[in-house]
Amino acid sequence: MTASHPDNILHILRVGHKGDGETADGAFVPYTLEGEEVAIEQDADGSKLIRIVKRSPHRVDPACRHYGICGGCSLQHMEASAYRDWKRQQVIIALEQRSLTGINVEPTIAIAPGTRRRASMSARRTGEGIVLGFHERGSHFIADMEVCPVLHPDLMKIVPRLRGALAEELPDRGSSEIMLTLTDTGIDAFFAIPGLKLDRDQRARFAMLADRLRIVRMTINGEMILQSAPPAMTWGPASVPIPAGVFLQATREAEATMLAHVSEDLAKAKKIADLFSGCGAFTLPLAMNHAVSAYDSETDAIAALGQTLRATQGLKPTHAERRDLFRRPLLKGELDAFDAVVIDPPRAGARSQVEQLALSKVQRIASISCNPATFARDARILVDGGYELKVVRPVDQFLWSAHVELTALFERR
Image 1: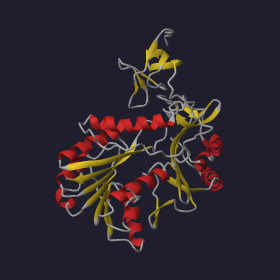
Image 2: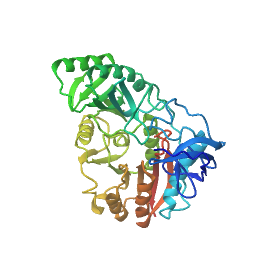
Image 3: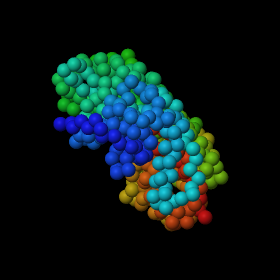
Image 4: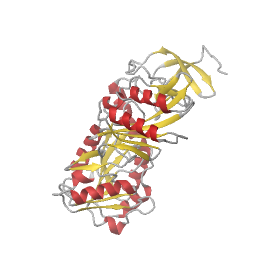
């Protein structure tokens, strides 16, 4: 039962690293800003904002009608310049927690709305029909999505028709997880529908849906239903066929920004190791001017990259190798063959690999991270190993969320 406390007024001291307002005694209140006085209700799930008593000058109207229900965004109520400064501060705070102070952290680079090219959504049949969208905040309920200012319009416009198609195919109380990826050749759609046993008629109906929506590949429960053209991405001089479910940067614009940073930072390098390379978003453009060796643990991704490298003319010497860099990082002796490294690990960072880099003779490291905390941990190891952290550049790839992408340059002292 929710207890109402009309006089429970809290002062918001700061916005915490997860995007919620934080009080002096450590309570968190979603959708609040530094300096605000707010009335709340308290229940088993935490503090719920009831009204703003004293409004921050940085508060703005949210861009989306679903904001506050849909859990996809948490910071649309913060004015743009304050929001970008908050993201920069999260990087500074993470570095300071590892005693890395006085670092040149540049202003956050803005990425425009309507550019997100990947989306993982959920659908469920209810008594009132199909709901399709992102989960509500802290809940298994789904916010039925009519608009989304984050998604690329080409993804958003097929949502109503997907909802209609699932209304015909999902069983009572049935559900589906849906991943949509906008590639250069069209939309790649992957459905996970528990308990669905596809028959011939269903395969035909889904194939017709894919054709109508110009989905170039549709996969359901691991079975390819239709592929009218291979989903592909163009990087540098080559078009790479994209395996289903493979990692891609969330927006083309952020990817281009990060590539520009890496290219500038490693412009004088002769031989580069691309660690956690994926399908080659950095490998292929870099290979136009540098010898590059790419490493990744994902079999399908590294196979697609290797196939593309073999088929592409005009590149410097390159190769792609499947290698689990968590269990079997490149060792000091292997790294010493390179004068530069690109490293773009998952959110967990790459402690084992970074420990070897700290021992190596590599002169320059271009780092990409989507987690300031693990980046700072790994940066501490590199600095202790004799590197200088020259610059950090936050990139707002995950718009209106608390997540921060960044690029950074390390140079051996």
